[in-house]
Length: 320
Image 1 (cartoon, rainbow, N blue to C red):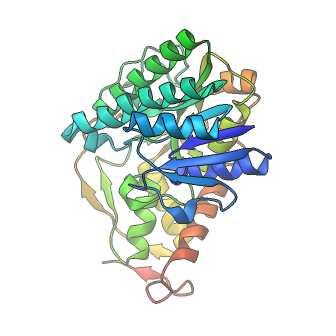
Image 2: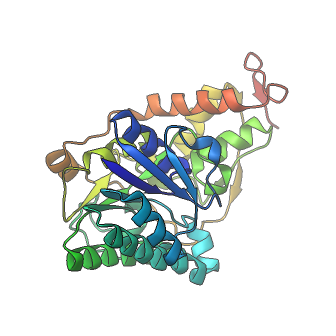
């Protein structure tokens, strides 16, 4: 099948592209390279530098490539940025999503798979683990934009007679992430490899549901032929605190560090765990990578990428 992936040069998108190519699909990547990189793009995929906010360009790309399925991952993903600039957040995440769906319709695509965010669309959910039936009650502009995106995908696809599946991610981690994402594991690793002390915001006891990026990519592949008209949580089904993650990262890095402490991030939730039973039942998907294994693979990746002059594996580093 011909698959178009928006945000395919980014962290999660590039892993999805690899997984699709491994399954024998033809892939076109659309990315404006604001946070993605050409280095991440598999050479077997076609690449087009474009912005989802440009409807005319998106329609033209879709009509030329004629994808059978469109995976929409391009987004503004920073909760804090959404709070400081909600107009930009909405322009990318809401209007950009409308443009991508309209492009898919114009291209005659069979299906749209939309990347949503389980950590933000539910807000401070009353039930844990959170099922897909939990009310959508976001507490940040980013969460609002993702909820709006879900509704636009649902309504526009239904009007066009096109299938859709929504995937609500947990906290995704793994290789190819960048510090600008402000994801805690990536932030810890980059800071430590630069010889600095990481910052733990709030008290560090906030606990979230972390899922390895390769498992998230696999869920998208499952959604090609299953889950039409449904939303699914894509996570591990368990939680781990920021303080625990910090200790495990330090152990794998062989360092002894006293972290700095920061304020609570606006819009951050205290804890969440996602119930992924529906994805198991309908998509035949479940997370395959235990957190300890995924964290080890992630640490190994960033250590290989690090400047050897700034990090010597055999020598523990003590921060005072």
